[in-house]
Length: 253
Image (cartoon, rainbow, N blue to C red; front, side, top):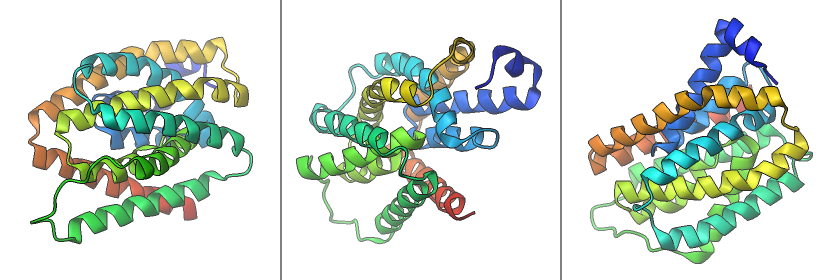
């Protein structure tokens, strides 16, 4: 784990971790797919699970800002299904942490994301209607989202595969995303601390980077407020597609 001295004295370290913190903030501001880039960025210098553990305090502290920003904009029906499912997924990730490789998970979620985007872009949508909340599908995709979130903070693709077809208003979509993953992140605290115990240096680094993440959160919300519904969801899908390709490539390289 890095220390404050390393963070301040190594320009490359400072750049990488500040970039990761800003991306975490953007994701908490309503651009969920970009947050998936944070762990890959830090993976240049540390194992992915260690990077995920380091970033968790930043995620949780950013959650407090983003939940307040979206406190009135969310889908309660989805939250009722996805939060319990996501917590179950976290517990499964914890129980299988020593058996499941990062590459296997990266390949799985990458292929799912690519398939979903290609299906969405090629199907006939002129007369299709918004999908309703489906408890069975929500439990399945929510559990998978919690699991992949535990492994590498990469819960966005399964979540989006389930929620995007519902065609929620963009602010409701962003708020639902924020609240669901805030709960999932809290559920990771004990499992992560048991796998890689936190030190005072780790928490100091997280506290030092909190302002960077907070700025990213506000910027993320401002961006989606200015984007039209059409361009917002297209941007989410494009980000999902690019990140999914990156995950597949990483899994085989």
